[in-house]
Every structure is written in C-alpha cells, then in structure tokens.
Length: 267
Image 1: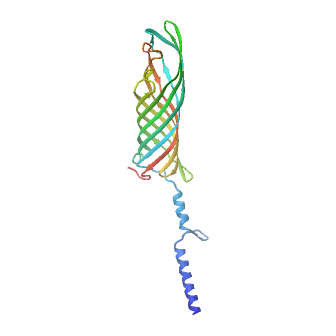
Image 2: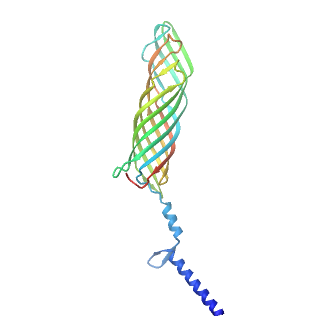
C-alpha cells in the first residue's frame, strides 16, 4: 500500500513539473538554456509604447495668454463736436486665459506624420487701464480703468506635422502647426468701446508631445494667435468718437492632453 502511494505521488510530481516546463519561454545561448516566465514576457510587450499613425484624435488644453494689446489711434477723431487727435496713449492688460478643444484626423501613409483638424478656441483678456492725451480745442488727459473685458471665440482649420522620436520605451514628438479661420469678438461695455464682431483668425504653434501610451500623450505648446479688429471708442459721451484698429492677438503657453483613436492604423 505504501509503495502504491509513493508511486502515485511520484507520478503527480513528474506531471506537474512537465506542465510548468511547457508553460515557460526559454532562450538558447551558446552555453546554456534560460527560462523566463510568460508574465515577464507579457510585461515587456505592454511596456512598449507605439507612436504610430492614428485615424483620429481629440485634444484638450489650457494656459496663460500674454496679450499683445495695442490700440491704433492714427485716425483723427471727434471730441465734443470738434476734430481731435490722440497725441499719446498707454494701455495695460490684465488677466488673460486661453482654452482649446480640437479634433484632428491622421493622413494615410506615406503622409502619416501629417494631420488635419478643426480647432475651437476661447480666450479672455482684459484692459485694466487706458491713458490718453487728446488734442482738440484744448489738451485733455483721460484715464479709463477697467475699460473692457474681451471674450474671443475662434474657429479654425489647421495642418499639423509631427515627428515621433523614440525615448526609452516611449516617444517624444516635436510638432508644428498652422491654422486659419475666424474670430468672434465680444466685449463687456459696447457703449464705451465697440469692437468689430468677426475678424480673420490665424495661429502658428510649435510644441512637444510625450506619449504616455499609444492612445494618450501630454503636450506643451507656445502659440501665436492673430486677431486684429476695427473699433469705435466713446471716452466721454455720444459726441466724442475715435476710430481705429486694436490688436487683440496673444502669445499663449498651452498644456494639455491628446487622446488618439485607431492607434497603429492608417486611413
């Protein structure tokens, strides 16, 4: 009886050893055979991040905008019914913010480093103070505080080129982009300052993406956004009027995240 139990135990031990050996991967070298767990092999495969062509993607970003605010008072105006000229002026911008939502589409090979897309952009800038020196019948100095708060919505089509570079097991992708479209300008006090509703919008940007996975990356992007609009300003009353153009352009530093769909595929 004891002999039969020992034989059964030996048989079970041998069978289990064979099953474990068959489930292991092995590598041949000149001197030996080494075994590796299948879990280790799976971990090595999943650690690799593939920055390959994609079918489409969504991008969300936000950041601080440096205002390039500049009022152009080269045209003569009217002050209390008489001709007047702005001799000198100085403007100060306040807090500025930029937010961005984009959808982009990958191009088929061999143009898989190029993508096209549509960008929806919103930015906010404020004019904290405007000082003017006006020569009319008399020399007058005017200072307006909290002149306006601008809310600008932009819609642009853009072209992007990116060049993925392997960094360890991930990728770093420098890119450049150019877009063109329109701006919708809104400001807080249109009785004091009336700005053109729609203007030409353009943007140029360079940036860096770091790929967290094949479907996700984070980015940092400096961007120039062009927006120049005509305006009418009434600093005193309805009898005073000055016309010109105002530069509402910004230089923005965006950070955000990309989500890619169909990674590894081409259209």
